[in-house]
Length: 117
Image 1: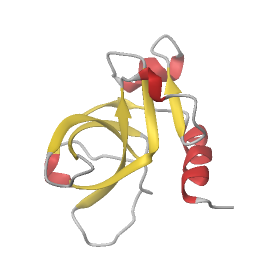
Image 2: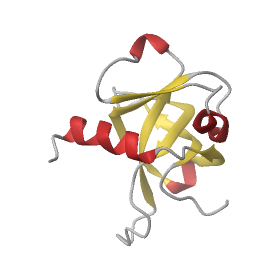
Image 3: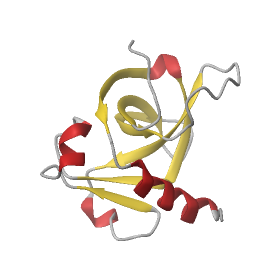
């Protein structure tokens, strides 16, 4: 697999909230590059094509007709949900779909989610 970096959009086995089941879905890597924690795990934010989920400060709308949307490799307008984070095993990452170049917007959403200054 290609080396993954913060801002990459990946296809991954993402755990459901019951932590007993999972679904292959796109996700955004939000973990810093070179975290060097010696774990084969990566922190990601779920990406959903359910547009009813947009409009919350913890979520970022991705329109496919925007320059940033085109770079993601997503097939549908989507919502990056920084209020739905997971730590996934690197071995469960199937492929890199693209990259979301507007990480400053994601950082604002993450700050809201995590109540960071």
